[in-house]
Image (tube, rainbow, N blue to C red; front, side, top):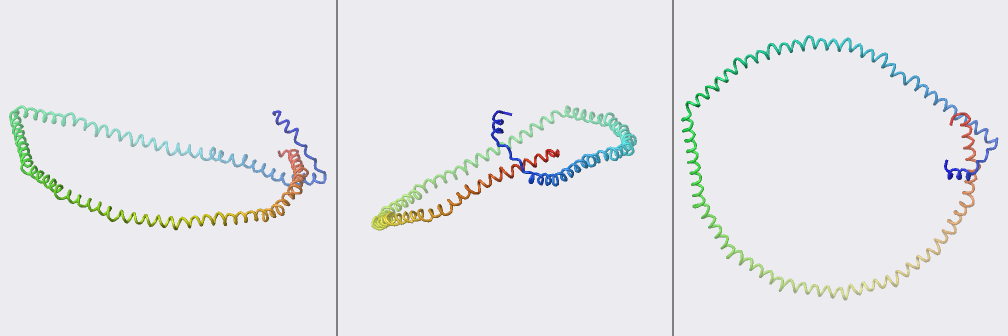
Length: 299
């Protein structure tokens, strides 16, 4: 315990003892109310500890575990032995001796020699007909070369006699269309736009700006000055007068007729009474109940 906590405990006032006429009823009520609940709680704890908790262990030890052992020895192990002895081992023997071994003998003594013979025949035939295949390859190459030259000549002729003249004609049409059609039309549209702006839109804009300026200077400006004068000279003084009257009438009446009596009542009556009840009644009653519970061993 630190020195600060010791000083705090020394500064705390000792609780006032309860009178006998109040202490004995408090003790009787504490015993009558707390002891039955304490006994009921201890009974529930004993039931949980000695009845509810052992039941799952007993069920597992004397019922579920023997049943599992019996199922293992009576059903699972015989089934595993039957599977291993009667099904898996004969099946492996059958596959090994009746399928794999004959298939391996067939591949080694029949299929492999036949394939080897076919390969040797193909090699022998290729050696004997080597010149035929050489001339056949040259012929195929010559045919493909002739086709490539024909395609090349056709593409060159198509570009030279069809695509190039069409491109030249399109370029000529575009140049002359721009020079004698689009450019003069654009110049005409630009001249019309400049003339429309210079001789129509600009004078109208100047006239509208003049009219708006005159209206603002001789209409809106005097109206704004009049509204500002009315706000400054009439509405603001009226508002200040109303605020002054409110603060010196309603606010003062509320302060001295409601706030001041409530504050005096709280500080002079309610707060002292509450402190007296806390220090003289509730705190001694609490300490007495605590001592009773400690004496009965319930704390």
